Image (cartoon, rainbow, N blue to C red; front, side, top):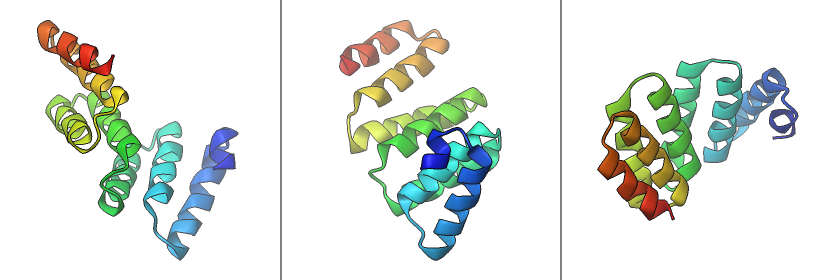
Length: 120
């Protein structure tokens, strides 16, 4: 975590990978995903977030980060599905903002407003 916070992404990835060999954990995969994103290893980051979700289906940050990556990649339907899953598990304001932004990008303004109001 310290490597990740101090922007030493490669060190973070290496340390996190070693820790996951010892004991797989949802937060381990989540933080590995963060490091992988920073070094632009997007497909590996997606896999890490998916593994984090498999281990802990309540890890909302993993859903949101996965949805954000999918959105950036242009995989809008998959991103929307991920955000909706996050909201169904725990209606967190961040997930509402994310789905609102995604929907607004698709010019579905009224629906986006609904999600922004839910975030409030």
